[in-house]
Amino acid sequence: MPRERFDFDNGRGQTLTGLLDVPRGQPAACALFAHCFTCGKDIRAAGRIAAALNRHGIAVLRFDFTGLGGSEGEFANTSFSSNIDDLVAAAEGLRARGMAPQILVGHSLGGAAVLAAASRIPEAKAVATIGAPSDPSHVTGLFRDRLDEIAADGEIEVELGQRRFRIRRSFVEDVAQQRLGELIGGLRRALLVMHAPLDGVVGIDNATQIFVAARHPKSFVSLDRADHLLSDPADADYAASVIAAWAARYVAQAPEEAAADAAPGLVRVRETGHGRFQQEVRVGPHRLLADEPERMGGDDTGPDPYGLLLASLGACTAMTLRMYADRKKLPLTGVSVDLRHEKVHGEDSGGSPDGRRSIDRISRVLHLEGELDPAQRARLQEIADMCPVHRTLHGTIEVDTSLA
Image (tube, rainbow, N blue to C red):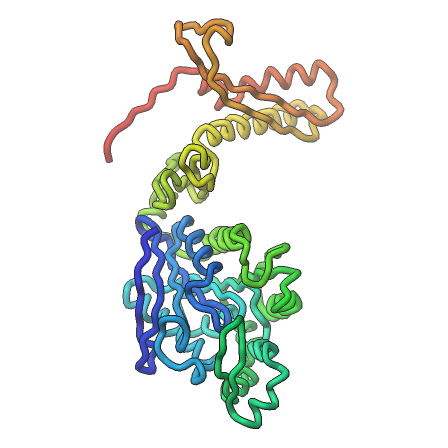
């Protein structure tokens, strides 16, 4: 995906450095990502989430808060309130580019920050948190044994994540004064709370408190066995996929994409720019990915074209059987379909009618559940061949290709 440096002023005369990850084509929406305490825009979770959101057509800005990474300023002079100001400044920078963020995503303390900043970003319609504390002062637990020193000396140096940072009394006082629960209650935006039950840094009870404080629409998704930093790529990809699917309900689409969705019967397939072969498939309001397996040079991020073909036939078969069984009041309690595609030699198939040396063969196995007698099962097998996609595949097909 295209990536560009995105610098902006934090409102205090300092330049903050960010990365803007943009999907190929017109973005469907823009998200603003806030990282965890003392982390930065380059942490693996942020990169993976940005890449996954890009694959769903969402642009993402991730940046270093004041005093971190490539951003100017001194970390010791920052606070939770300054982080909120940084987020508002980042939104203003995007707004100036015509990309005001509709989605806010925050990880850990960044999650608390986006909850607090949302009311100051009018374009934001959806807020997602990942492993966020319900109270910003939770972060002081990282150095709780030295709070008395901070109170007495005004400033100390602590080691966090094998790096040393200066923490001042003003930071501790600032987080203690935050009233995040009140802000969550008045959020007036769609909220998605994501948390791992086994999170050893920010306990799952924080997710409960955020969720209870919020008003609808709100959703909770468990990240199962993920750790706090989403160090497993699969966990980061899953989180991003859920965020993209959830946010699509609340954000405005690009005009041409909305027009495409509105056209009855139109399926649009386009390259995403991720890997060699990945495609975004849009069927009305629905999105899915197509790709090739790794052995064919792809990234295996979605089914291959033949997989989609088999899925179409399988879905149509199951739906047809269900409609028939319901109409005839047959005791069919469940149906599933297994399909495989292969190229076979014409002679192996009993002879190709047009003399071709190889033909396509699709093997379809029906799994029918329920107290069906042999005659009913046999009839359902016959009905399977009458599904519309099956008949299309056996009929005469014309593909008319033209240039737009």
